Image 1 (tube, rainbow, N blue to C red):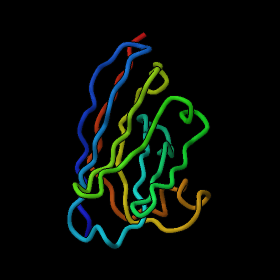
Image 2 (image 1 turned 135 degrees about the vertical axis):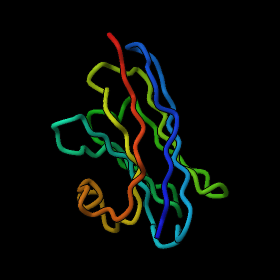
Image 3 (image 1 turned 60 degrees about the horizontal axis):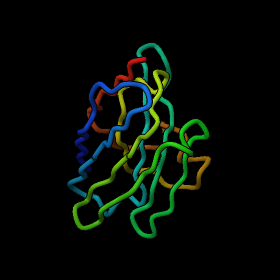
Image 4 (image 1 turned 60 degrees about the vertical axis):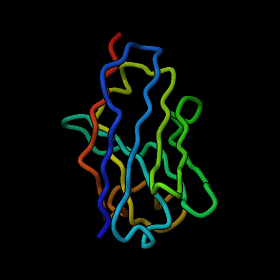
Length: 126
């Protein structure tokens, strides 16, 4: 089992920045990658970004790749999502995920991920 705890969400004005954190515990060695997803009520969970623990390979959704940066601190089993130039359409609950394997196409699929955090709300006001 892997436990994930997100933090760092909140209310921010359009154009502002937020940094999310996700601390992983438990059998973290079983997951080669960590992912970030987001979801609005009534909508499907949407892929945002992913990073591998070993070499820091990253992959982003097109909608965020020029504004968001995913990083990790292996010593602290923590991944981060730095979100800049936020827009109202970025408003969502953001989830950290672990346990998926595969390439970029597979990692975009929420069904591929075994473990999820509780989510943290990010609200961007216009």
